[in-house]
Image (cartoon, rainbow, N blue to C red; front, side):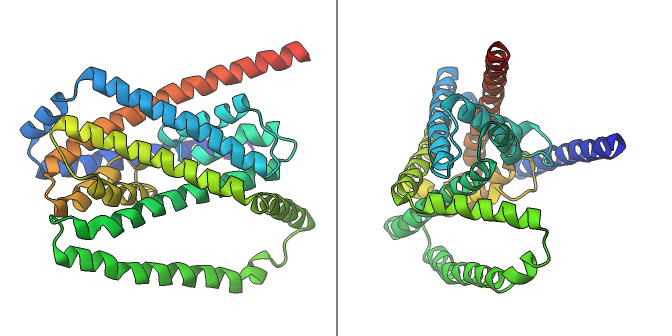
Length: 329
């Protein structure tokens, strides 16, 4: 058992090393094709005070994310207090960047909640619903950007047509995938143990609890949209400091798509992939690649420092919770 655990841990750390190496490789390719001197100058234009102001905004936005996550999981019946929710959320934020992907940010986020909640299935279901609301928030920002694209004279007609032409294909692909899963549901779930079916029943009950509270879902989607919009605005602010000024409509189109691309499990925390996607998506708007990369690198600095602070906050909350349990025990 210990040998298997050690092998799993070794594979996890090997995977995180490979993903950090992939991130450095992607950034290295970008640096190879973009001018280094203007890139350094653009990064140097960002005042230290602006960096810490953006970092503060980043942490405040994630604090709102804690409240949103707690609201959604408690709607499923998790019954978590704010301190436990903050420990779960900030631990997951740290895990996304610094822990092996075999552990993963979501698993770290769930670990404490599953132990503390009287209904672990509610925590799992609420987390899935929260992730879905985040995806819908990203999709809403992309849709808003697409609707505003015709107002941008910088966008060539062929780019607009390609983007709009791809939407029906993406929609059909999603519908096909959902339909396939629905048709295969009996084969996928058939032959499972009684214990598995009981857990599935608990998940269904938690999902019904959330679905019966549409106001919570609407408020969660709105809060998720505001959080993602705050991140977008902070990135655009850093870009201005780097010397890149673009219409907000361009950021509404490119930034959410770049973040979606960063979800692909290619690099740790999407580092490198997000910057490459931003450079590609903003180039039709006339954005110089080195300025886009400069803003992306400074933003990654904010994300990494914020992840370290989130991990420290989760550790402090964990220690405080352990002391409270020992006193009560």
